[in-house]
Length: 79
Picture 1 (tube, rainbow, N blue to C red):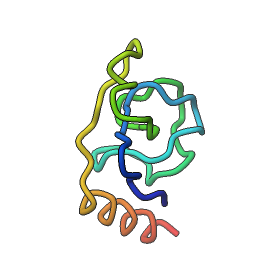
Picture 2 (cartoon, one colour):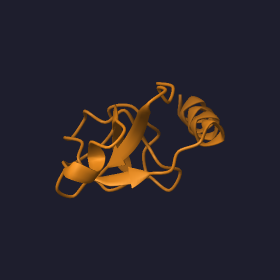
Picture 3 (cartoon, helix red, strand yellow):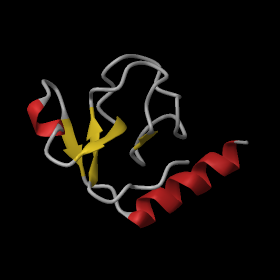
């Protein structure tokens, strides 16, 4: 599971199917590479801060280190 890089943000709604870095807690899948379709709003990729707001359908998602830990635990339970 990727860590939230410094100077980057989670950008939802722009990942291609199977190419997401992770997903928010409410997602139906656990994490990396599990987006079923292009542009899922709860699946995200990490982008340099400020870039997501410039992309059509891009939504900056507030992801904390605790969120990342919770998602990692969710992923481990499914393994």
